[in-house]
Image 1 (tube, rainbow, N blue to C red):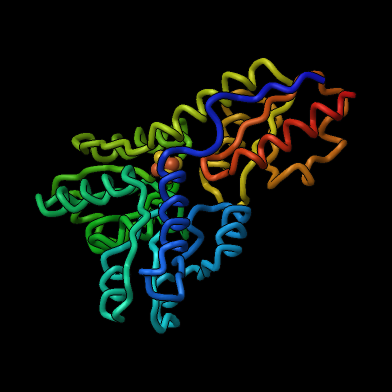
Image 2 (spheres, rainbow, N blue to C red):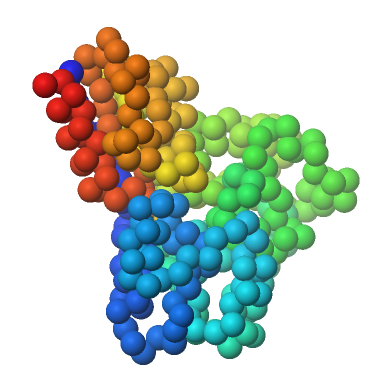
Amino acid sequence: MEVIPVTPRGYCYGVVDAIQLVREVARDPGYPRPIQVLGQIVHNRHVVEELDRLGVITLDGPDRLKLLEKVEGGTVIFTAHGISPAVREAAIRRGLRVVDATCPDVARTHELVRKLVAQGYELLYVGKRNHPEPEGVIGEAPEHIHLVEQEGDLDQLPEEVQQRLATRPVAVTTQTTLSQWDTIRIIAAIRQRYPDAEVYNEICRATQTRQEAAVEAARQVDLVLVVGDRRSNNSNRLVQVVREIAGKPAYLIDDENDIRPEWLQGVTRVAVTAGSSTPSHITRAVIERLRRWEA
Ligand code: SF4
């Protein structure tokens, strides 16, 4: 069996910088203790476990404002996914030392939506429900930014929102880690309904290049394994685009222990890629394990 590592794969610059920032804070005695990250710094349990060994506490849960209520003191780090103004203000009010590891690409979306809302736009934001990135961006102006996960959501928007969308300038923007093919389809549906909508596609370059490389590689193999955490949106999207765009089987694995022998039956070529929050040593171990498999 031939093993083809896909390039590019794995860590993007936003993830590298966020993890590095947490390591620096953990080593610097100048930051008040305890050091706490509000959510997983990036969605990968191996990364969270490494930071745990450095004494960094990950506060995990769906509601970051509620998580903050439990924080009595010390330093709080905002994750690469970005944060709403309400959470930032609550952390400052509680007298916490704040460190912001938001990826610059996500920060740019925050700036964009602030500017558009200030100019009087009503915004449709294409993104995943219950993911921290949309929560942070929509939190910039919840009354004017509306989440659209699927085309059908356009019909579910409350009446007063539909009215504002019909009478005010409309802009569309997106989460950074979506499937680019899904997003094109959803934006086309939005444009049918709001032909004058201005579109700001914010899918980041790291996401685009990893998806394109995965689809390209998939066309030449029998199977694609995506190394990434179940909670990582960009990892899940890699599986999705390989299946939907390249029409090849693909599975998400957390590490080498998740490889199932039945997936490899009859497979002569397998490609391996990784989400942008997956440490390279985990992906290397998967590639090595597969190479030994053929021996
Ligand atoms: S996937 Fe994109 S938005 Fe997310 S951390 Fe990486 S570069 Fe930033």
